[in-house]
Amino acid sequence: MIVGEQKPLEEIWEMVKVHKQLTVFGCNTCVAVCHQGGNKEAGILASLLRMKATQEEVDIEIVDSGIERQCEHEFFESVRDLMNRSEAVLSLACGIGVQFVATKYQTLPVYPALNTTFLGDVIAVGHFTEKCQACGDCVLGLTGGVCPVSRCCKRLMNGPCGGSSNGKCEISKEIDCAWQLIVDRLEALGRLDDYEKIPPLKDWSKDRAGGPRSFKLEDM
Image (cartoon, rainbow, N blue to C red; front, side, top):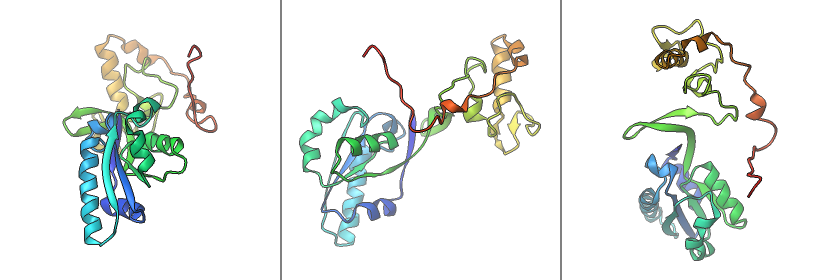
C-alpha cells in the first residue's frame, strides 16, 4: 500500500486560503488505510479549515467529498458536477492521485494535503513500515522475500556489510539488518545454500531510465 502523512494545517492553509471555494477531496483506498486521506479525514480536515477561515475572517466556502480512487477515470463520474463547480481542490490522495486530478482537470488548481512517504505494509494498528521502493527490478525471489533495496540502509545486493552486529544495522540498534533477515528467511526455507550465490548487479536503469516509467498491457 501507499503510505502518506498529512501536511501541517498551517502549510495547507497557506496554499488554499486565496480561493473563494475549495473542495477537500478524499481518496478511499491506500491512504485511507493509514487514516490520512479517506473521506473521514477529508471531513475532519474541511472542518479544521473552516475554523481557520473563521478565525482569520477569510471568506471561503469549503466542502468535502471523496471517491474510491483518485487514480482511475471511472470513479470520477459520481463527482462530475462537484468538480465542475469547484474553484480549487485539496487532494488527500498520494502524489499519483494529485497529479491524476491535475491532469484530468487542466484549469482546476489541485493542492496536495499529504506528503507521500513510501510503499509499505501494516505491522500493527496504526504502525506502517516501508517494504518496497518500486525499483522496477524485483529480486525478492533471490532473497527469500526480503527486499535489500528498501530494507538495507546501504542497498547492498551481497551482504551483510561489516557494520552489522547482533542482527542490527550500524545506523541504529532499532533497525534490523536486512541481510540477517534474508539469511534467517533462507534458512527457514531450507535454501541457505542460495546465500552462497552472488546476485547480479542491480539494474538501476529500470528505476531511472530517463523520464517517467510506464507499463502497458498489449492486449488491452
